[in-house]
Amino acid sequence: MTKAPEHFDVIVLGSGVAGLSVAVRLAGSRGGLSVCVVTKGALAESATAWAQGGVAAVLGGDEDSTDLHLADTLAAGAGLCDVDAVRVLVDEGPLCVQELIALGAEFDRESSGRLSLAREGGHSRARVVHAGGAATGHEVERALVEATKTSASAIYEHTFALDLLVHDNTCVGVSVLVDGEVKELRSTATVLATGGAGQVFAVTTNPKEATGDGLAMALRAHVAVADIEFMQFHPTALHHPAMPRPLLSEALRGHGAILRDATGSQFVDELAPRDVVSRAMAAKMAEEHSEHLWLDATGLEEFSRRFPTLASSLHAIGLDPAKDWIPIAPAAHHLAGGVITDLDGATSLSGLFAAGEVACSGVHGANRLASNSLLEGMVFGARVADAILHGETDAKPTGVMVALLDPDHAELRATTVDVAPSTRPSDLHGDGGLDVAALRSTLQRAMTAGAGVVRSEASLHQAMDVIGEIEVTLKAHGTLSAATVELCNLLTVARGLLVAAVARTESRGNHARQEFVEQDPTWRRRQLLIERGA
Ligand code: SIN
Image (cartoon, rainbow, N blue to C red; front, side, top):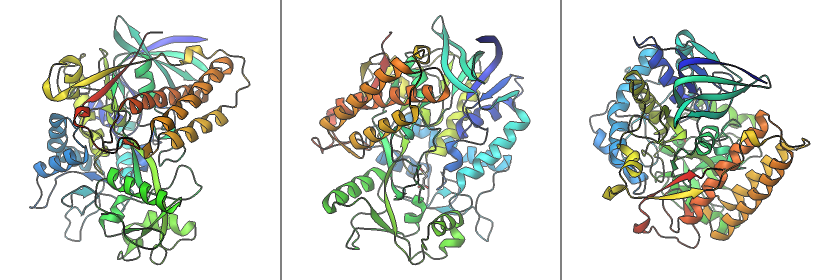
């Protein structure tokens, strides 16, 4: 049954740092806009709350500069960052952090009162602000949730977004599933801030909600996405049956923790960017035929005082980081690509904006620099809000959008890849009797085996075959529910990732191909994926 639509000026899908940054800024403006935040869980449940290390921003330290932060971000991005977008990120980041502090977020400080700054992989300076040692995301989310509760016009929790509503080539809202019923929420502007898609993989640091919902909705609405072959694998997830895998923050390596192989030898520069470290780990594990390596944090002073949340989760499983080496292995962590946007978060669909991990703003290129993701959410969330306040609806040829709106631009060449139509929620009227959890787990295992840290054409095709089989079963037996739509979304994102990964016959950033181990300069371009009409 379809209920009568409600209308808001702005609908924000997602309640992480990007979405709530949009909502708080809009609601706090003098525009008097009605803003509705829609989220499939509780308001405070988002991957943001899980973020550990911190927020990279040049806030202090005479030696640091935004030019250095820019250079580090470009180097980590392996030739695919959009320089204009990174310039925006590093220049506007410090003010966003100050605004968050003004909103009530409390970051760790030295005894002098100055913000305490950590160093992480790929950063040439210590510039990462953090809270509770490695509980930064929790504090950022807390501050934004409190501000949202007092300012948003409506907050719809436990409301599952199904598909974008498109009329006359314009996004006019979203259909949602609430209490088993489909409802339409109409809006003048719709913001995708639904986060990442780590749950496409069996071994991930992402919460179970990270199922690529916004990305899949965008693909189904024929909105252009890019760079989704670049799933980042975080080097130091705890090797433990728990899923999602508990993360051991990169801040530990920043403070001197060492990676060791089975013989106890160091084998990689711990402060290299994540793609470099994860690839070295994959090679070492293949050589040793081992499932994990070791993180040695025994030399860190005051581990428990500096990182209380990590210390208590390690103690809970019988590990004492002051004495024990910690078993670790890479796990899917962050998607560098997503829905392509201009510098104000506008997408290729009029009325639709995107910010945060669901977006491809171009700041990460082929590999994200540590602690640039909360930052991206804050900076581009604020820019989306400002664009909406200025009445903007359509993308301009800025940032990554140059690749779509100005294809002749020399430095931002892109290849457009057609993707076959995917299963959509409206296709789900099968005969029931589907074990959705088992299918989800089959999909995740196929992706970890076939599209992990190192991929080959054969492994990618094997994963594609499994996905094809799951799609057939889903279409035959699936009925409409949040669980089946999440499975649709995972399949859609997985298929796009595989298509892009097969086509990219080189190794660059987060994408490592067994047969093409070098970077190929002719591949210094993004792949724009656009789903064909059904
Ligand atoms: C970490 O603390 O290592 C994770 C933070 C990030 O993904 O940048």
